[in-house]
Image (tube, rainbow, N blue to C red):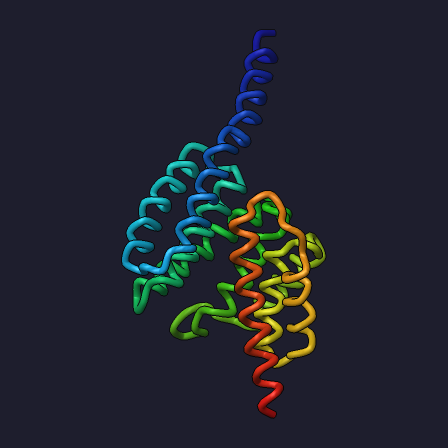
Amino acid sequence: MFRWPVFLILVIAGGYQQCAYPSSESALLNKLSILLSSHDDTTILRELASLQHEARQLTYQCSECPFDWYVLGRIEHEIARKSGGLAQLKAARLAKNALTRAARLDIRVAQGDALANLAQLYLETPSWPLSFGDKHKARQLLEEALVIAPQNISVLLVAGQLYLELGQTDKARRYLQMVVDTEPMNNALTHHLKITQASTMLTKINNKLLEQ
């Protein structure tokens, strides 16, 4: 007789737990965007370690929150990019685990960003036996992300990077141009960084074509 109220309280509490830290997550992503605009790699690594600690605390508090795992994976992905040697491989594996968990909890988390970041990891990381890099897997994940969020600037940028790596220059240029042509969204700094990346890649492609 008294079990139902207790059960309902637990359900409500569980539902609350899964969306308890939206402001913390957004703040971490904003800090990450600001940090990535810096050019001091030593400072970036130190600050990334601090953000990593904060993101891990969120996953400890809510182990079933997909966005928390996505944020942690994003930060660990950047740590891998800024590190070298064994530290880079370790960070890449941690990023893969976090992003995979985020996508398993919610395939649409962050509008396909988790899948897009996973695709980047598989593309950027060395292949077996050194690590888990796999261009086929990267393409599979990217195509899933494009189905979920075909207008997401992050997904489009990864598409440009992937198809450029695969030697499909025309396809890469099309996706990169879509990034450059997008209107600013919520996070203007993040948007600006991605447009800058896309523009740089487009310039390199066009210069290479002119040389041919």
